[in-house]
Each structure stands twice: as C-alpha cells, then as structure tokens.
Image (cartoon, rainbow, N blue to C red; front, side, top):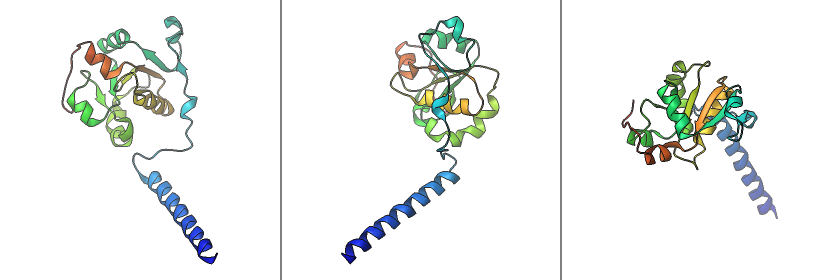
Length: 169
C-alpha cells in the first residue's frame, strides 16, 4: 500500500511539474497562446446575409472566388495563412505569408503593413481548412474589424487556373 501511495504521489508531482513547465513555456514563447482570450466572441457574417447588409458589419465575412478576385484586383491586402513550405510552392500573387501556427514569428513583419481601416483578405488550403478563419479571429482580437475569408482557399484558386507566384517574399 505504501508503494502505491508513493507511486501516486510521484505521478501527481510529474503531472504538476509538467503543467507548470508547459504554462511557463507558453507564456514566454513567441507563438504562445493566451488561454483566456475569447476568440469565439468574434462576430461572423454568414453567407446567407444579403450582401448590402454585410458591408455594414464589422467582423469576419466570407467571400466567394469572384468576390476574392474583385477585392484582390482593387488592391486589398491578402494574407496566406498556410505554412511557409506551402506558400513557397505557390501562392496568390501579392499574398503575404502569415502562418497561423507560427503567427508570433511573422507578426512583427506583417502588422506594420496592415491598416485597421481597410479590408484584409485571408485564405488557406481549401474548404476544409480553418486556419484563415482562425487567423482572422486572432487579428480581430487585435483590433482589426474588416476581415474577409475566402473559404475556397488555395485549392479553389489553383483549380480555377488563376495566376500563381512561388517562392518566399
């Protein structure tokens, strides 16, 4: 019985020490996550809302390929939320890399080029990828409110045979 109690105490100590180390690492890591942020409170305009109403709404809006292309042609900033490897292999012309999972590594370089007053476009791998929406939610928490997510992402862009750039910018 004494051995069992000792083993349980040791296991508990390992769990507690592991949790403390993990929280400390998260706190000092450039890609650390604030566990208290309310990322799900970001307003999202669903596709079913009439377009004339979506232009009056702050938060995240979803755009189609045609809408994405129109805004891209109008000179809006485009953010690629995929990894650096995927970005280097090919990306939407003029897109800026901001890997959602390495966000802290890129923010210093990307944030100065973003305007709180202008629409920002996001895309990632395709319809099943949520990284662009998650990244848009993170930027909303930083004060950006005109955020547009192209759900079709790279997959739909490439399938449409549209222009592609490759390499790192």
